Amino acid sequence: MTISNKDPIVAIATAPGRGGIGVVRVSAPELAAFIKQFFGRDLTARHAHYLPFADANGQAIDEGIALFFKGPHSYTGEDVLELQGHGGPAVLKRVIDRCIEVAREMHMGLRHAEPGEFTQRAFLNNRLDLAQAEAVADLIDASSEAAARSAMESLSGVFSGLVNALADRVIHLRMLVEATLDFPEEEIEFLEKYQAREELNSIQADLQHLIQQARQGMILREGMHVVLAGQPNVGKSSLLNALAGDDVAIVTPIAGTTRDKVIRQIHIQGVPIHIVDTAGLRETDDTVESIGIARTWAEIEKANVIVHLQDARSPNDELDADITRRLPARTPVLKVFNKLDLLSEEEAAVLNLQISETTEEAGHEATGILVSAKKETGLDALRQKLLDIAGWNPSAESPWLARERHLHALNSASEHLAMAEEHASYDDRVLDLFAEELRLAHDELCKITGQFSSDDLLGEIFSSFCIGK
Ligand SMILES: Nc1nc2c(ncn2[C@@H]2O[C@H](COP(=O)(O)OP(=O)(O)OP(=O)(O)O)[C@@H](O)[C@H]2O)c(=O)[nH]1
Ligand SMILES: [Mg+2]
Image (cartoon, rainbow, N blue to C red; front, side, top):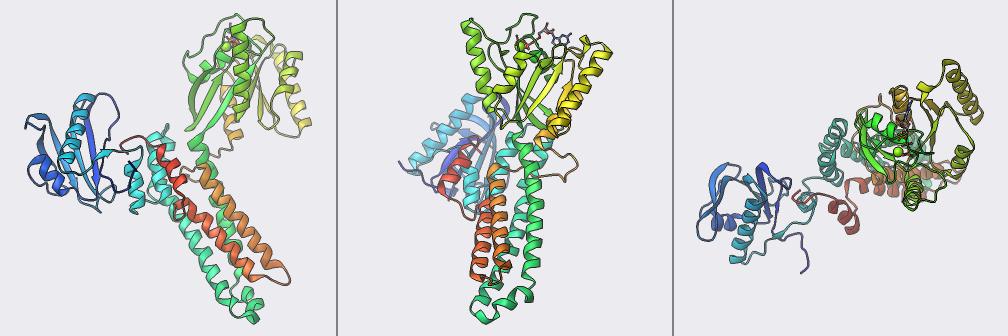
């Protein structure tokens, strides 16, 4: 059976498991006849009807509220029926089965919805653009208040509005060029006459601002994977516990305690940070431990940031130098020296000096931090440093949540504008190439809101939704 965007669909819209209320949602181009069959009566649109939901024999499966939204004034833009009953998995399944049974009697072909299919219909019926549809999933998935607030900004169309405004300015400029193309003798004057280059520069500047904000939005949505790596016993698991504020990983004085990775999500200023504690790195004959160490290296390869944890009493020793050599060059490494509480004041001062000297040599600000996982000192500096590495700027305007594909499209649009600028600066200006670059920039911007989107992209976006949304 091929899946059609017009098929009547049904799903449980509330979270699986037990709950005070459970909602079954049906969407179809036309539901009036189905409602009549299901309840033996019509429902007034947008009215709460308290009714029994009956089985084939007229026995009540449940009692609850039925809400009918007549398309296009509904979430999907089609006719939508919501049945709000008691939130138990068995009772909700019976309600769904009854819906499918009624539909079958009517030869209506009601089927279970795919993940995100209700929202996909909302997009296809122009109730939401693509960036807003993505924001629906992001709002549901938001793991911090800041992320939820930003997802709501995107959902309300703030981000789409800014993208559309820029796309309109690009189109306007392009129209002026296209109009001039028919009159080659005017080409030279065109750029001056319409101040085309000034407008192009101004669009580029606004686009750069948007890119900055989108980067912030992406950090807030995706966070960072931080891998704690280092020799055994330096305090990786203790540091994870201290950052998480919970005893998630086992800590013992025995070197080689952690075998399998332990992942914990924390938030720093609302930014989700996934911290991965790993098995300490050393030569070992122990089979289990060496599997653990292989996993550590696999995690290191996937990390956005590596925290190379060391014992402050023996900083940068030979084994640490070995580890440093093996770390991937593309990933930022933050050296963190633990067990500060075991150093005298003089020893700490010497280590601090060493850190600032080596980082000055490397030509960047301090990348070494002294902490005590046990006494929980130095952790604020560590948190701040992680945010800096992520590129998080807390004073930036409240961003919307952005995805990799948004940033990619914005960057491509910016490249095309830069090419257009280049075409405009040649002595023998090539206005048709100028116009072509504007067209490409415009297309990139429109990809964000989904005016141009392939079925593959839509499939990828909506399949990551939960069922019933
Ligand atoms: N004094 C002091 N002891 C610490 C500190 N951090 C960890 N320790 C101790 O160091 C020992 C090892 O700590 P873990 O957190 O298990 O070390 P690990 O790096 O996870 O070790 P493996 O899992 O074996 O690789 C434990 O006895 C901890 O109590 C610290 O900041 N100060
Ligand atoms: Mg450990």
